[in-house]
Amino acid sequence: MYIAAIFVASILGCSHAFPSGAHNNGSNIMESMSSYCTAGHFRPNHANHLPQSTAAPYTITVTSPAGTMYKHGQPVTITLAGTSGRQFKGFFIQGDCTEVTFEGTITCGSQGHNVTFCGKSGATHSNAVPKDQVVCTWNPPEFQIGKVQFIATFVENFSIFWSGVRSSTTLVADPTALTYAQQLQRFQMLLMQRMNGAGGE
Image 1 (tube, rainbow, N blue to C red):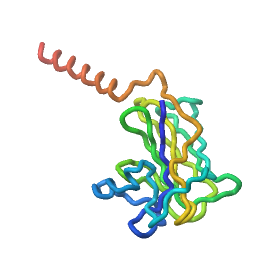
Image 2 (image 1 turned 60 degrees about the vertical axis):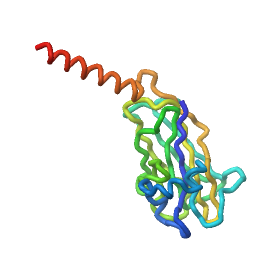
Image 3 (image 1 turned 90 degrees about the vertical axis):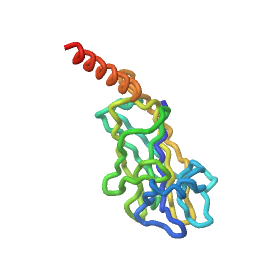
Image 4 (image 1 turned 135 degrees about the vertical axis):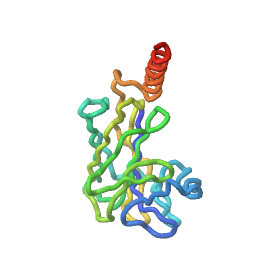
């Protein structure tokens, strides 16, 4: 199981930055086809600037009440932080997994808000104030979505940012939890049983 929650520190725009984070572009087909979306790193669109090629001076720490697993009803804590006092101004966090789609809700309290960017839902920063760390929470869905990991892009300033930063922790699903497809199949079977029962009366 492999969740890649993408934390993209993103101040997005066509030619200018958004201090309140990545803007919703979920319904904009043209933007979803742009290079900053299709490249897969969900980088901020900051003029001619591309992500840094050096190792990111930031870390993503994942803590689950279930240890190396995630379970519905047990929120997972995700901490974005700089190393050696390094600060960042922006972020965008998103989930990824080994199932078809990432599910569950990611929230970052007063430091972030939810957004749909490049067709992916996640959370981004609410202001461009320099941050030592940001603590977010992922609430896992009722069904399992395979392995889960968290990925982020951190924005230090308009011209300096890192994308594709991954957590060192990969969470696995609760082995007793069903997948979405299994839950749907169970629901369909129950529905058919009820329909057949009603038809026999």
